[in-house]
Structure formats: structure tokens, C-alpha cells
Length: 306
Image (cartoon, rainbow, N blue to C red; front, side):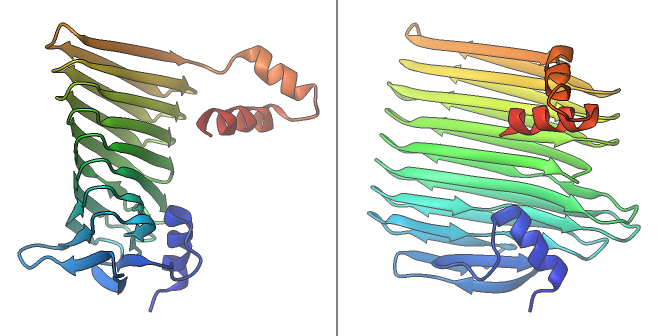
């Protein structure tokens, strides 16, 4: 039975206000809190380490699977391994994410290792949200590792979101694309206080006509620090684009390191990076409409991270 705090965390990270329809696996404080498989999506526990295997039958369409994790116990630290096996011709949505409520003095941490094996001619949307809260002095730590192996003709869209409450995180993502495969990543990130966040994306375009678009939008406030590293390797006739667009405020620091590696004459690769403060004329314009300066800043940030 989930506590009220755990239910609130589920609403934040997975928009779940009740038990979801379809396949799901809910993990709370290191234990299984609910699971359901369907005719096309089977979820089984690993026998050699913590985690689950999610197997999606070929041809599965218009179905979803939710695998959120919530922690409300101070001092709990865990590493979980989840593997996804997506058959040919699937069109599915996968919703993950982690929420930590820490009201104690000990650090709480969740490290999720997700590995996706995606067949041919698939369409997969993956949503991963991270959220932290709590009045304790203990940190809320999340270090997700994601590996994505995309089969021929398949497309993967990844929505990576961290907006509030995570003290330390390193998001490490590796993607390898076959011929005709496509990857789109949209990262949204905000840090405040003394928080630290590092995002590392490594994309290998290994097949002809493969493509990748990796875009990060972030806001760094107070004394927080962000590092964004993105490396795209064009190993075949391919196209790749990576972009970091950051707003810096107060005494925060942001480091952007885009990297391109062309190993094929027909690889077309582009990178962009922009870091700056909120323009004063934007704030003034909104203040003429009746907003205070702080309200104007929040409106600009919300629109930027949308």
C-alpha cells in the first residue's frame, strides 16, 4: 500500500493519480509496490540482481508501460537494472522516472540503469522525470544510466526532465543507431541552491541515413552548477545535431561541451551552445503588464523550459 507521500511523488514523476491502465511496475522504498503485465507486454523480475525485464511483443501498437520509482525513506540507497526488449514494428510509450522525498539527515539515492534493445521499424517514446522534495538535510541523489540500441528504420524520442529538488545527479546516456534509425532527445533541467547536475550524451551514428537531434534547455539558479557534455560520432552517411541553451542566474555556473566526430566523408554534424542571462527588456515588458520582477522572471523561465 502506497503512502500519501509516495502517491504525491507518483503524480509528479509519472502523472499518475491512480493505478495506470496497461502494463506497469511500481517500486517504492526498494520493494515492489504493484505490477501488471498484458497480453503484449510482459514484466518479469531479474533473478541475478535488482530490477526487471520488460518484453514487448512484435507488432504491439498504441500501448504503454509505466515503471516509476519512489523513495520516502531517508538513508535508502539502491541500484536497479531494467532491460527493455522491444520487438519489430512496435509503437509504444514508456514512462519511467524517480521521485525522492527525504525528510531525514541521511542521503537518499537511486541509480537506475536502463538498457533498451529496440527492433526494426519501431516507434518508441520514452519519458523520464526526476523530482525531489523534503525538509531534511539529507541529499536527494539520482544517477541514471541509459543505453539505447536502435534497430533499422526505428525512431526513438526521449523526454528527459528534472525541474525541482534533486541535489546531485549525473545523467549518462549512450545511443547506437543502425541504418535509417532516428533519435530525438529533449532535455529540460533546472537547478537551484547548491545543486549539481551533469548530463552526458554519447551518440553513435553507425548506419547509413541515421540521424540524431539532442537538445538541452536548462536554467541554473543560486549557487548551482551544471555541466552538459554531448558527443555525436558520425560513422556512416548520417546527420547529427546537438544544442545546449542555458539561462544562468545569480552565482550559478554552467559548462557546455559539445563534441562532434566525423568518421565518414558523408557525415553532416552540427553543434550549438548558448549561455546567457534573462534579457532585461523581456522583464520590463512583462512588468508593464502588471507583473512583479520575480513574477516576470518565472514566466520567462516557464516558457523557456516548456
